[in-house]
Length: 401
Image 1 (spheres, rainbow, N blue to C red):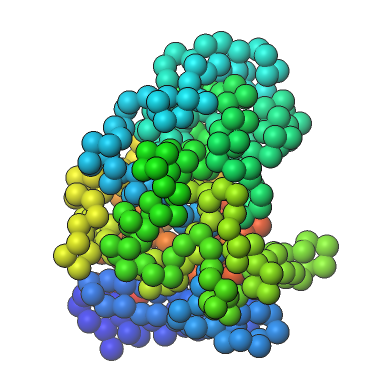
Image 2 (image 1 turned 90 degrees about the vertical axis):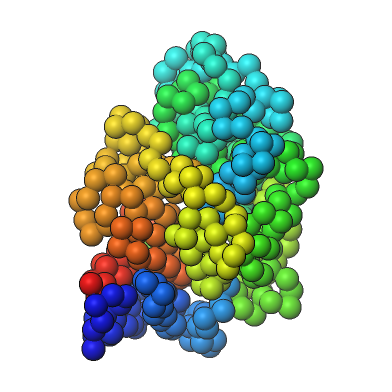
């Protein structure tokens, strides 16, 4: 039976069939998924916590949401902008002196001493839009700047692998020149890591406390954080990665000795949160509602509009395409990707982001549609795996009217 708004019950049956197939074929050990439209919510809970099938998946299972951390950190930053504690286009030099007085490579693949002065300081907007001049670049690993970041232990890496503590991270980052002039190019991830350090310094408290005060607490996201308490580790599934030689899923992180069960030296604002379906739905609903949830305003509607608006020009979108997984028609806002041109089911203005450890989220205001998919299988490339791509199609095909 189908209504004129919300979700089609008939078509939601196809979602369960297709997602069940991904689990039964061993593509993912389990998953939790939700589609929300016009107040109607459909949830699927399938499979188990591990490949042996010993612990059934639950709606309140904890997932490592990886880069879905980025929009949470961005919201916290913008709450400080609204209070005039931070300003989008002011230099960050006062709070991040390690990044003041930058030198810039004349060529991205050039030697580290072949530089020119930065034409302007790095700003908060540069951190939010990933245009600060540091981050993942599509360069060979032997390129001097990539090699130097790797040797210093500050390159882009899988979540919860060791970074130095925040002050040391910035000291090492400050030893390197920028890949490009501030604001001129787009490089993934590092902007959110630096942003998290900025927020901690601005508030005089660890990043986890800042996120709890400004976003997680007001939204009732009680299970979201950088570490999992010992008495809750049973809710954390085994995280898997594909072993290409054998074609089998092998453990990447086990709850018996999970990296998320202990404090990290640096809580990464770009990739280290653990969350649940209902917690992240609370976050998604807040943004869809223009910054308010259950009468509590987190951000103003105009600020949400800015966060979810594309900030990149055409050349920057084209350069970002290998990471954003598009044909160059997807942009970047503040911690979220933004659909600029309709080349698939998503309407222009759709925003969201994926987590490389197996999670995905989108809000489509034009369709009044939210989708959240949580799995425990690491992506093999920036292009989302079939289960994520199928979930998006299944969410859109369930739209009733």
